Length: 112
Length: 118
Image (cartoon, rainbow over all chains, first blue to last red; front, side, top):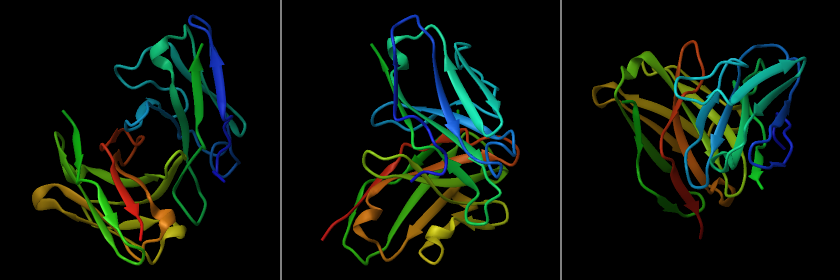
């Protein structure tokens, strides 16, 4: 069982927008603005898409955006494209005594 | 450009140890923490721990305490992760990933598949 909860799958048609949620606790997502989102294509390493809740690294499309409300962070992808089909993982710093960073279980995005 | 190049796939028997290397280039090795994250087949990402290449200081996930050792060799800009007393459920792709002191985990290695099988 992952520390952060994500839906197992989401889907959308090209051009549409989708949102992936990531629910944690006040010890991680809700307590700090250190939420990141990663995109992972099959057989590839994860790629940073969003950091510190809503910041995009250089080179990442502005179709990707992030937000947070309480203990839930969200990743929104607008203008869906076929190449967006991938697994998406959220991650957060945690004040837990047992580990420093936590990940969500991942969400499979299917572009119909 | 930033590159993290990991060692090749390994097959180990239960009870054995494995040591994975991660050679960094394109940036100042001692200026960024190195984290290790694993991914079991078809599963999500799991944080294992991290090392400060400058000081050698480490922080391990409690789950792996006593079985994992993270080290580094600054002369060759390489980080290592050794996992001992391997079990079948340690079968996974192991990733190294760098992180600035302030900022996210931003670059990842290509991953190393470790298969534990009798």
